[in-house]
Length: 444
Image (cartoon, rainbow, N blue to C red; front, side, top):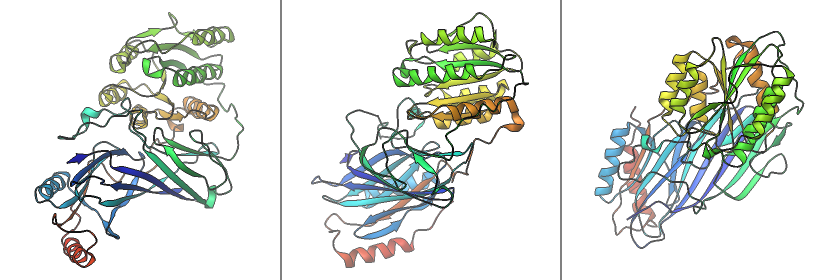
């Protein structure tokens, strides 16, 4: 029997010490059926997550999963299923997408999974942003790249109501700094959340100074192509936010800059026949044109569109892309961006911008990626983008803020049981666990 909806609840326990955030995710599972079941659950982690350990709690004993080569772990897991043994397998499919499989959970069996990881927070322009992804959105991840074998690709649905709790403890450099959340309602310096829906990223912003300075060189001349996503996926708040950002971005142009605007969805369209000089008259003209933009251009197809933009791009120009995500062959687009040698400055909007892809695209083209969540002020993001634009490649900061543990890894644990065994039999369970633990060692 295979089930994918045995998840009872998720808890995020976050501790931030200076600029190191340590997060422990606790997932509670329960098999309420009268048959042995298999749990299959796909979930995201932060793109900067450095996994420290993965453990399971069963029979009041906490056991650590070992790192194994993916093929070996999968073969061991399949063998455990055939032998009616309880087995745990966690597979990393993309940069931050994991699938947990737990085989042969006894009727009325309960267990908990603990994933502990840390990440380095980046302090930039008197602020730092920390986020925890909670859900996988079909627009932002290409499921055909995930190798699920006989497991169905995970789907996001409004009928799935997984809930989470969260506690956040802060000490060190950030303890006296104002913390806010554009994604959720919080109170106090040690925010807590109870029974919140897992439908968007959890975002915290630490901000020392709310003031914004237009700290941009007046002497540098820039040629900018603004590319705004007007696909059907931008309907509602994402489109409104993108238009607001583009309107403010135009106001930051210097008089000797030139610009043009491209809107895209299934196709692309230039709003003006040629580049405009950033005079106040032309900026006002462009801002008025932005008011009429809407998410009515169908599904986006950026792979072909971006090549069209490259072909029409002026020499020594840059691209500023505003979007919430790309439903296309992202690896090919990253390669095109790299080959183009055109810096891409990308602003991701909404609660779940396609962070992995945007980071890769910006970094490969010597550009910069910034995200602006719903409810978050846009000034700091635009300041970072335009500072990088005016300073050039020498002034750009690295997109990556920490080293990943690695991708394509698998974690495995096997527990020898018999169908007739009861998990409450402590003596027999301890004997089995000791035998099992003595035979498990990491394989790299």
